[in-house]
Length: 114
Image 1 (tube, rainbow, N blue to C red):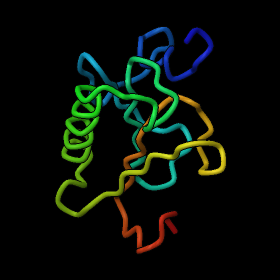
Image 2: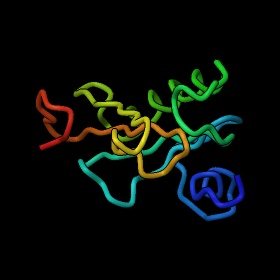
Image 3: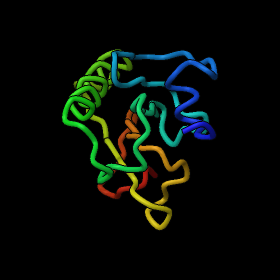
Image 4: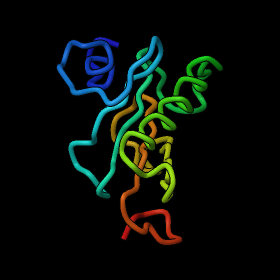
């Protein structure tokens, strides 16, 4: 999708410092972090959201990226949260599938880090 910011980042049109990359996904730090560790895992192919017919290999790459990011950022042992918003009412502001990986502090039981 030519006007999608995440497509441009994931495919190298907009430079970013990737923490992880494979054939299907990239991971980079969120520009507006909600926790000490706040990384976005973004597919290179455009999918509007999680229920947009995402291929199994892309979902597997997302899982691998989360594991690699958690290890690289030092939250694999202490714990982290993964969030995928689907639709504007859920808080999705970029309509390109992405997963938030949050950690680096006690996030509590609520869905939003305190």
